[in-house]
Image (cartoon, rainbow over all chains, first blue to last red; front, side, top):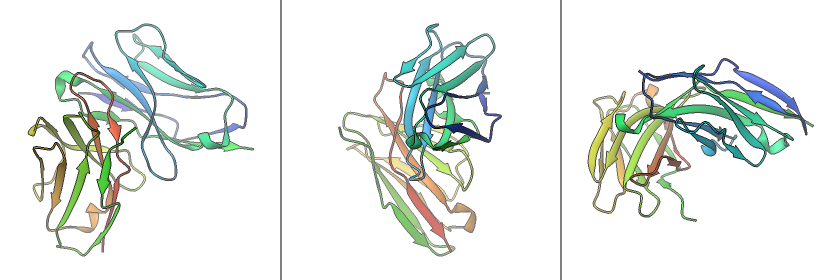
Length: 115
Length: 112
């Protein structure tokens, strides 16, 4: 069974600083995808970044990057130059498409950004 | 770019009533997933459809049913509503062969 764990219920960062959100997962499959979704107060689920398990290179999207450690089953999100608009709930998620493709989410990390 | 559309955005029902939630996927997306997010919780998978056929089922109560129509839109029907059904219901769509699900804005259901 797939499981995703986020052990940081809350994190705080100063504006313009860097913060790292942690995520670990467990699966016996070799072909899977990992995602970070952002959920601001509007409750919209917004895709932040995605990573294919077969790719060793860490994904990067502007100020957002991941540290994907496949052997350790770790998938952390780094936000550089944090902005007030980054304040939100962040969910880590995994999906295995040859098993139906449902997203399995972690518990979420509430990120606050201090001006 | 077109996004996933959900209607209604807000719905208030009484206990034991029935509710229908609608989802219109992004054009050319053939797969729809439904998720339920309770207060302070992460989204939980309910059910999915691919090419109008149910493809997977999660922790969906027997009181709930869903289907996908020929135009690929999907409806989630919820009967005998309970207080615990109050939640945010998301629909996400994906094009076959792709790997990223795109979420709609959600329907907030409140059961009184």
